[in-house]
Image 1 (cartoon, rainbow, N blue to C red):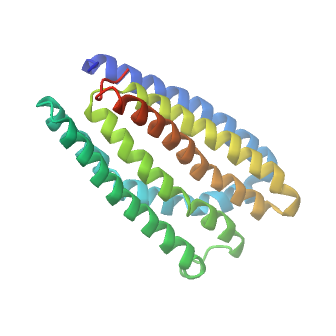
Image 2: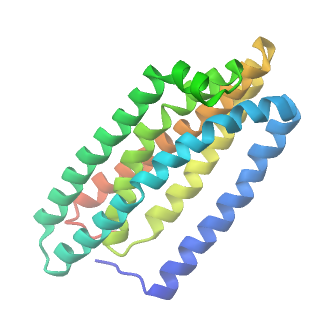
Length: 216
């Protein structure tokens, strides 16, 4: 299996982070131009709940990475696959559960937090992101456990590109309906980014599984 040194892995992930931040400019700037401060405010209201899920589930990919690394060190390839399958199930349950909570209790959440009613569309849109982000995170932990950061780095860039294209695109398309709908479309970009990155990681997993985890 092709492993990467700590310095190389750090450089790869750091570079991917810089590129992702740069691509983020192409999301924020057009969104500000399209929907202004009010629309961006609706969009940002939903984000703390999304980030709460990210923070709550952040430890699981680290655990996946550790367990995968331990089993891979003794060439227990079947054990590696079992770790990923169980982790995928756990993350999927968490993602679906959090999505369901946001969708079912969106109105009560808005009322309790005293948000503007127009933020409803952003909250509903961002609610779909945890499903895709959870699966994507499990794959990232898997690849990191195999000491291959290329897939994680590329998936980060793909995630951001998907977020920019879909988020800004939907914001533009839905703008005639109102800025609250446009903000909701922008929020849906988070789910789209997670979906595209997850598809890429799944494709890499299927491709390399046939090679007995000899990743490229």
